[in-house]
Length: 623
Image (cartoon, rainbow, N blue to C red; front, top):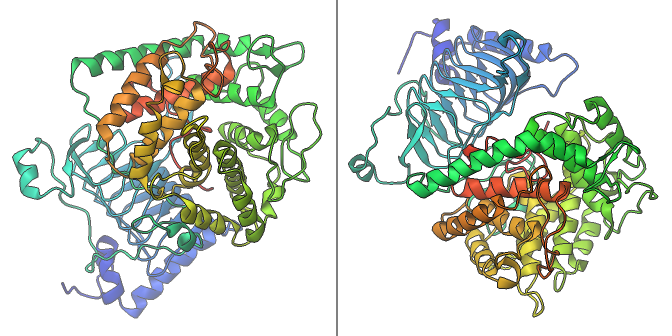
């Protein structure tokens, strides 16, 4: 197509033509436009980043807090862009599109004209006028190679997987797995994009078709934008490419579980009733574990106060009530938790204990301080705060020290201990990045993922080996902790996902740990999380995984003790005689487990909550 070069409005509406057809004067005007955006950032030089060959229409209303445009990305005429907006390479925000709140797009995302991506929401409590309601934001995340048609609305909290196509006029209110073709209001799956079109036509669901508005660059190429330094270390045996762990997200390929049938309806009603009960009883549950005489939380009445109990209280209150535990103000919660961190090492001791000594690669080999990196960090994150200091013990860890420590971990007989150590180290690296510091010494984070890829067993997907005494308990439980802090937290695909599913399902049949009455929170969590995580990469044995999850979900709902919460369960090795007293730890863990179980069977929406702390299902988003 050839157009008059003096038509300035042409490029505002068809920005993909700018690179080939713009005059020198028009290029100078665009350069000035981008300089003004950069100048508007003031001293916050990182808040606006514009890649090579970007275009921002002069008529677009672009007033963001953060704006990152990857190479060859465009914002077209009359778009309205505010908030924290991050686009990968080859993205197009077409004319009259609204992108507001917290919105992250991968590479090659095309958003059709007149669409709205609204990464924020207003409260609707009846006792307050709408204009005075608080504004919340869970954010919208869109994967790579996604086409969003014209007049589409995507609401806050939605994740759209890689390679999706969203039909014109759709209203997307729920997460969409990768390769989904969806349409309608609310948007529903029509087919898998990889299916032959003829097959889809024969089973077509009535609804809108993806049409109009999604402007394509003439080449249609994606460059991948794989420029961050973790790429090579993280590649290993996983098919395809891997993003920087500070930006990446896993490819979501699982099919949504069918919601038809009386059994699903009954279970959904049970989930909804359970969640309503838990929310109603949460204030009393928290008060039960508060010691007003000393001003601290305990896990359960009669127990000693612990740092973890305070963090569990924060997680439960946020999950069920959407607010801080009422025993203290938000500022008091933040002040107390931040004050726990040792400024010299960045580690957090237990109440009354001296600051822990760092281990050979930063994190101590034993003690509560290793878990406090997770629980205190995420409690502060839920409170809108952070550690006051980097975790210096990890910040100064070199790659060679880390690799030596990884090799020395007790993989042969205590794989859970080894996985837990990696969870703590990787989480400390994450908090360091969030504070704007280096994760560790140069090359250490890359060395972690490189070591993990090269040491995963291709036959089992595990790190570590079964033992005659405990079977697969150690490697499976260690797998959860290891991948939670590394692959899941940083949004990287796990290696050998199908073999992991085989191993975990085999372990889930072990009656020592999963016979009725013998399940505890750790053992069930350490099965459902790997199944859930791997289901985002493969549909291997999906029905078996869902059947196991359904059985466990039904049993878990019956463990709730009125006004007390959940007990943890039998002793950690699964051989204990009975349940522990209900407490904060068991309640926090089982609430997250129930969400993961429900999500795997496609019923998580009935709970009306989604974990955002330690057991959050989503990769963390860097600030």
